[in-house]
Length: 313
Ligand SMILES: Nc1ncnc2c1ncn2[C@@H]1O[C@H](COP(=O)(O)OP(=O)(O)OP(=O)(O)O)[C@@H](O)[C@H]1O
Ligand SMILES: [Mg+2]
Image (tube, rainbow, N blue to C red; front, top):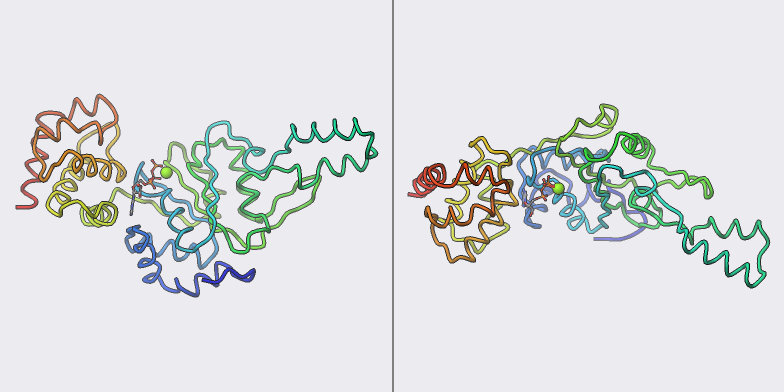
């Protein structure tokens, strides 16, 4: 793949990933399993150069998509992890105060520059700390990076307002430096666990896709892609069990991450087929609340193991 300054998402999308099928196969080559709906949305994200808002339960592969896309398209991944209280400064840019102070002291001590020249230097690029949003639109990249704005529902509404602006114009104004405009529109993936609703104005700028818990077949394919060493029978039993577990009224049903961890754990324990004892002993790998473990351990687990055993017989 070329890395010329001219490369854009369009060029990428028109090349190796010109169709939904080729993109789906490309993602699979990176061990990411999609269904048709998700592959189509991702294809359109690249083609239309629109941000994508991914919502879904925990551990269904939202964050992973951004990582896989950046590998597949051979482009940098820039991640903004959102949290309560994250302010625009930490997300966009800050001035490096300690270094500015040091610089000031040095020129004071040496009796160097006049005030105006010092001010000019102090607020130059050298003392600018680029945070993820500025990094993503920074003209230094010679191809569009993937910008992952992860768990946007955890950030405050004020940050959402900044995002709205950024995702409309792909430019940032640093008062001392002027406006910095993206040379390449980044591939933007926003994720949310829906702990609160994202504002309609932000949604309007994005394509949207809800990732559900995987179907039996999809979960089996993901397991085969991620833990290929798992014997087929055991893999089918594990998936039958986790699918059944998601029908139980739990505080926190297991996501794909838990299925994968549990498979690795069972392999580490030398398990070749599910049985009541090993399931009860390893429930802590898939259930992360004591109330859920208490509810499942014993009768519920036994009946799910029974179903899982039948699913392969
Ligand atoms: N479709 C998939 N193909 C391959 N691996 C997957 C898929 N879905 C999930 N996984 C795997 O499951 C794990 C969890 O995925 P990820 O961290 O992306 O979930 P998430 O939706 O971002 O969860 P959270 O909401 O907790 O952040 C990762 O190890 C990822 O590789
Ligand atoms: Mg995530």
